[in-house]
Image (cartoon, rainbow, N blue to C red; front, side):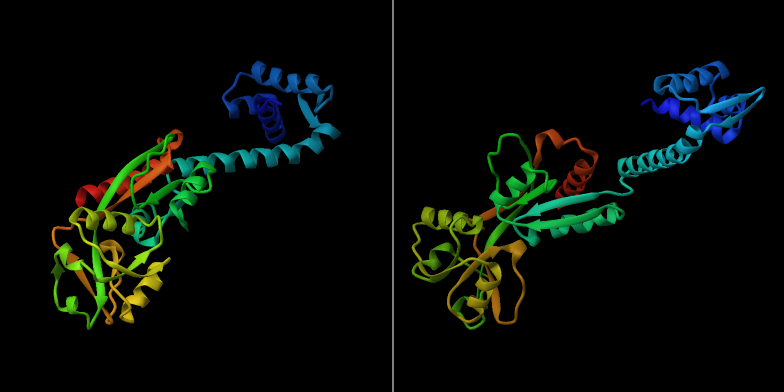
Length: 290
């Protein structure tokens, strides 16, 4: 069904004549008349009764009029929606992240730049984030390391040193840093297998020839912090994820031999989407200012 023909019908019904409707739409009268007649001929109906120079809506025309008015209103709403989203005056950006610490800074800056765009964050591991990206559940993924992922666009955002944190009465607690060799035979609390923090720290210790004693494997940052606060062992965390607590003390490893990197991912085919590009551009500005 031609929207131009329906628009012509609505204009004639509203203005009461073909000539007035043609002027309102910026068309010639013959063109407008052809559009209305084409609609009538297509469906074999009569929409107007011509009575000399006067026209009146037929029964079918009267029934069609409120429908076409509603369609016109919806068309206007659709235009407004697309225009506002295109100008980023509205919209919903969905982020997937392995933890809130990696994404909060970016979201804060983005919200200040685009206050009318709704932002939501879905937390999961890296496998879940990639699945959500592929299924359009999230638009952008924020991950703690680089992944070789065909079909995805990746942007490096930041590098974060791995730091230790200890109970406030631990021998390391009064020091700002320790050498990695001093971790020899220390009781360590480890994150779960697959943790980026654990992976890079173990690699750094292996390179230095350092062996530690794993006292416990813990699957969350919160539980890890509580275990350190109770003096069970030494914890390790990205400096961006460290939360101050009077029961614990942060301690750097001299030379920062272990670190994680935050990367932003999106489907390659969606890289130039205005909504996605707006977030990546804000992240780029933050990265350059750091």
